[in-house]
Length: 173
Image 1 (tube, rainbow, N blue to C red):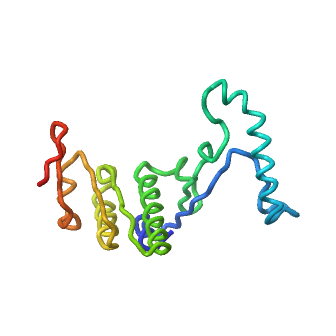
Image 2: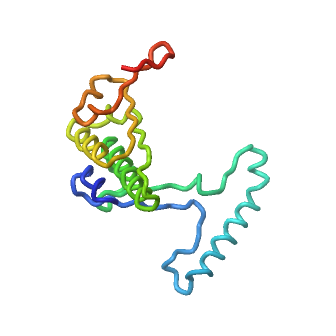
Image 3: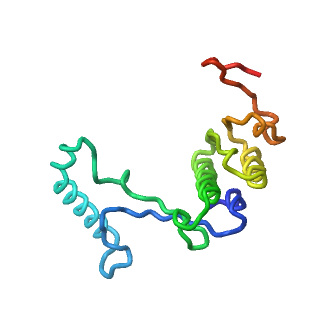
């Protein structure tokens, strides 16, 4: 995670794990590495795809693939899905997204657009301030939505143009 995003989780160590549903050999398995591991993963996917093909057609959806895998967030080694509050879970995803914007920026030398869709209502005032400070200082174009107009009146949002949707019309303020 980036330094800019890590302060959102109060100095705790945030890590992300990828948990495939398909059983593949562990990178720690002796004798499995590099190209051989890739071949084993490919063979495992092809076998499972073949085994589940009829069921996928019957149900009209895919049962195997990365869209069925899990991303696990850990804070100080503890699974946030099982042990974290909703706020901690939300902050972990936001920290991950901020780290992602930093990575995109370092690779492309352009800041990505950041959309914060009604996230402010899910955070306490301290974490709301931390988030808005982090996103306002990085030069990204930021879109912030909220169902609570009061949450948009924050010093770090003062330079963002405001619009309201009323009766299906976008009204600039």
